[in-house]
Image (spheres, rainbow, N blue to C red):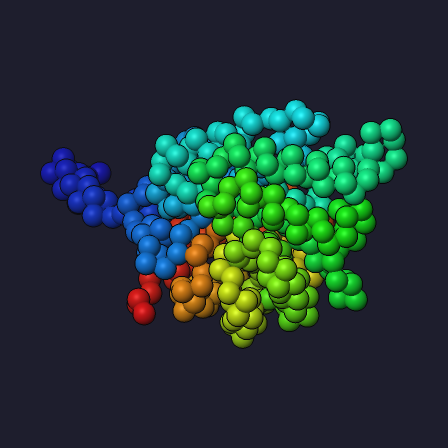
Length: 375
């Protein structure tokens, strides 16, 4: 049993020790649930001379510990789902603004920019938009008018509050033997729906930056089909300002050469580049799309942690080297507490894809991303 003097000295020693630690180190020392702290350099501070740093979120993330982390770390935000067509206009002429407005209001109150996502997509599109007024399929003229009405209404509402829009999302087909995706938009309108979407958005807000957004943009074969689409748009004088590379990546891809080649290829068209939906899964995409084997577990092992760290370090090194053409990098979700990958039907596993853990604390990859020597 300790004497009172020894007990007092022990308590003082502990107090001195813990008072010198950051919140993150304190949590590690206690081996308890980490306290919420923002007493460390943020992503937006580290990259203020390079590009803005964003995050995708929903209304539920605008309060509590996640909101504090957002305010500390990010200077751009994207609505993960609230601005998609099916959520904004589920019935013709009936717009539901509450969730989207809450995100824009939060951004304005905290001095954060907003990316709009998205105006035209083959998914999360309400069925009514493709139906004719007397039954059957809608005509091309009516469908384009509905698209114009939707885009004009949405972009006008947020004019001056949203600096960039993903106008058309994922129009290139996954099949390398095809060019454009055989969506209902394409079946009814052909390529014209893409051209018109950009024209409608530009007319509604001439100051907004307009992007085409897609995934697997670094894979050489799909990269070339995307490039050809973008070149056609540019050659026709379509008001497109940049390309959004979604960046749903893994430990295996992209390679540094693939990433560099893609950036150079798209930038050669005079387009700005934004990485719009960044996360790095610890599982290969092909493996994610197969059912889990009986002996597989969802564990973020030391080996996987190191591989993820190296992949994040590599891609941000490349990003920094192209700061003249890259204007934003946005993470798709805030932390490993919740990721869209965990809910994706064919995956059903924890992917640990982000820079913050389930307690909103920086992972080792975070420190690799922010601790660099400026060029």
